[in-house]
View 1 (tube, rainbow, N blue to C red):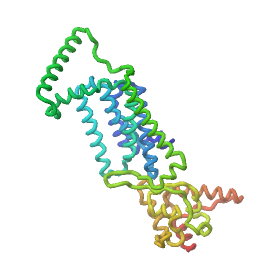
View 2: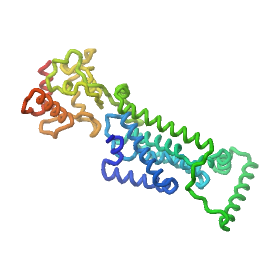
View 3: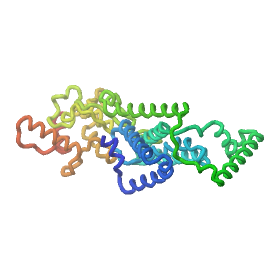
View 4: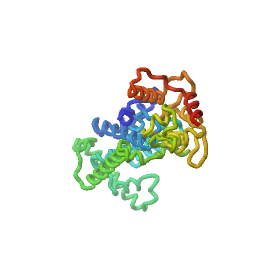
Length: 378
């Protein structure tokens, strides 16, 4: 729950926070006056949670903070917004085109390999905002084929698709309609258009709402299952990780277990033995092979095919990963601040000594001591 919900309210620094707030303020300036506070707030939450869910399932090796998923949810909602208020936007087709270009330009810089950007959260937020906008849309009546054809015939890009007589007829009809509405409005016979409408009961509107609501519920249900149910998330042994134009980072998950035949040969506080049975995800494939029982921790990292790799060499991959991405971090030198792994070892030692009735707890072994224990067991 911390990663899915509260991660939206945390940021990686002042620049990260200011960038998100400034981008979201510009989008909220368009949406909130028309949709109202509650609907816009619900959209922001749905977009943020959708992005966090997809990020947690697709890339469990990385800890994500920030409200970028909520921002992309606001961008996705601009599509149903433009359809809902099609008759009240000066150039709705151009508005949709500009929104599409904005999303592509904003995402292009992230997809070329910018470090520290979670593209899964962006994609999840975009999908969540798009579906939520259509699920709560008030009307799609204005977005009708006749209106789209009229605007296409009078636009600069698509005028050549219609005959000259058709374009002339549409232009005259539009000029007469605009002049009539201007005269009626100036005389006070009709009020200006309002942005607050009630839900319309046309079958087309309800079909759009129902399909979008089913899609959003299905999207969330599948992600929650793969996040919380062991039988589901254990089936994802190799999640794709973060993706970009350079490829995906990859992530390797399994239940920690020793190499076959080494169950009783490992030292008492060996990392594989202490964490046995835990389901864990690793950035490095070499470390995953050691902790998942696919490589020997005693025979120089040999796997079932006889290929070898030093155990301490594989452990060296952990601190080389970017901050926040390594699920376990082994200290390189003695005296370095305690890592998550060392705290796990200390906790396991306390439990072990409590069971045996010991009153003292030895200090956690360093990386050098672990390497000596490994060589001693060979």
